[in-house]
Structures are given as structure tokens and as C-alpha cells.
Length: 90
Image 1 (cartoon, rainbow, N blue to C red):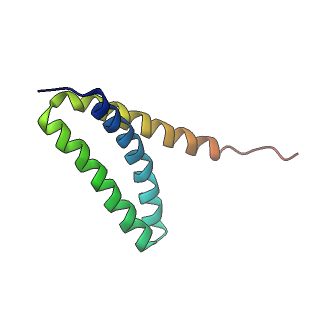
Image 2 (image 1 turned 60 degrees about the horizontal axis):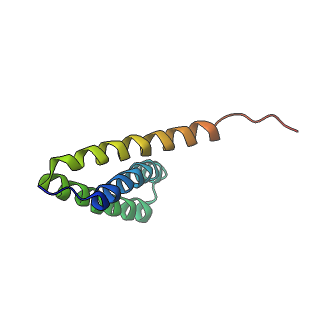
Image 3 (image 1 turned 45 degrees about the horizontal axis):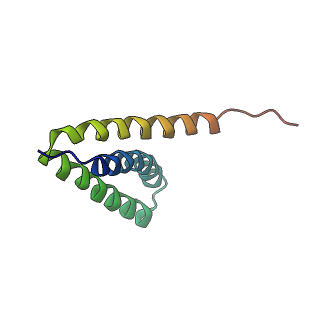
């Protein structure tokens, strides 16, 4: 089992992107935007497959996958929470 830091980095960033895309995907389904939902879903599954194919070959790639997922979810929730704060009128 060979561990490649470039592959680990790509998996990490792919899963940050996947979590952001998942939020966008959910919003587009709620808004009934068929083409956007379908396209986003297909792109997500492509990136998910990249991660899965790599951690099947080397279980150590689960670590950057989990960390990327955590960071992606954190950023999406943090961004959403800050955009919902009521700003005082000036």
C-alpha cells in the first residue's frame, strides 16, 4: 500500500467541494431546478467515486476524506449561519 500525499490532498479538497455541492444540490432540489440538481448530483458522484476508488486501494485515504468532509460541512454551515444574521440598518 503506497500513500501519495498529492492523492491525499486531492481527496481532501474533493471532499470539501463535495460537501459544498451537497448543500447546493439540496437547495436546487427544494427549488425544483431539475437540470441544476441533476448536474450537481452527477458531479458529486464523480468526485465521491474518486475518493472511494482510492480508499479501497489504501485505507489511509479515509483520513483526508473525513477531514475534507468535516472542513466542507463546517464552511457551508458557518457561511450559511453568517448570511442569516440580521444586519442593522444604517
